[in-house]
Amino acid sequence: MATATIWDLPNYAGALFTASPRQTPFLSMIGGLTGGKQTANFQFPTGSEYTITAVSQPNITENDSLTAPASGNFARSQDTNVTQIFHESVAISYVKMSNAGRMSGLNTIGQVNNVADEKAFQIAVTLEKIARDIEYTFLNGAYFAAANADQANRSRGILTAISSNTLDNSAEALEKKDLQEVFRVAWTNGARFQNMVLFVNAAQKQAITDIYGYAPEDRNIGGLNIKQIETDFGNVGIVLDPFMPTTVVLGAELSVCAPVFQPVPGKGNFFYEELSKTGAAESGQIFGQIGLDYGPEWMHFKITNLEDPDA
Image (cartoon, one colour):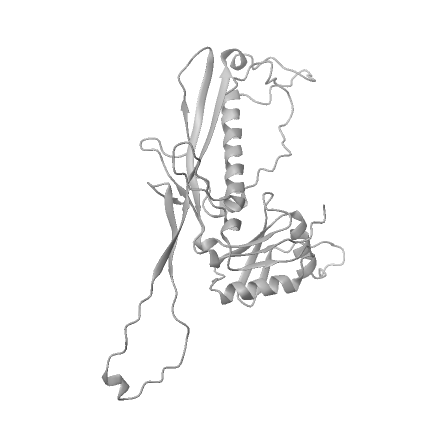
């Protein structure tokens, strides 16, 4: 942990901006860092499933009915995921904190430091970083369940989880027939389309607008922004997500998705606490454990290997 000093964190005047993506729509729409489920075990169930035998028309005579038929049993299975650790620290020297009035860069009379409280700023941006990392993990995370203290739990992301309703597009551009096919396959396999949302990056968002767009009534206004598709199976929302792969479209049934928190007793989850002092600096850590409950994987769908227009 490097301690921030006045020399490596200079103060500036002017409005604060960042080009780094700050939106975390998937995480926000399933509860964010304040809503969701809790667990006291790093492994947790995402669902317990069973299958009913194929439909058929019974052919039972009166005499057959005098004897009870052979019993049938329906076995259950369980799918699981894990929480994983998100851990960051903040350290700022006393000298840095006491020099809020020392400015770098261009300074004009009347301008002030754009960060009034360096510690609060660093904690806030660190929490933004954690939220971004969670968003990426919940979408793209590769699963691993630790077997000892030297191994890290890694939460399975929803894209990794989906195996039933998938469509490989062979590096072709997204077309309406692709969406129609995956909608149909998902519904046939049990997806309920109760709160189905497409999560896409910029390229596929433009492709969807081109596919479903129509000319506006006002001839003085141009442009389209398709935010929802009405399908035969239910309405499907469309959300831009900067952490979605460019060549993938995700259909997530949000009604079965939730973050799962594993709080530390007496402290909660994603808490900031001061660390012991070793010198003239304020230092602290932010710690949290979280994983994704995505419900039954067949509730969702994905189209992969789409054409990448930026490649």
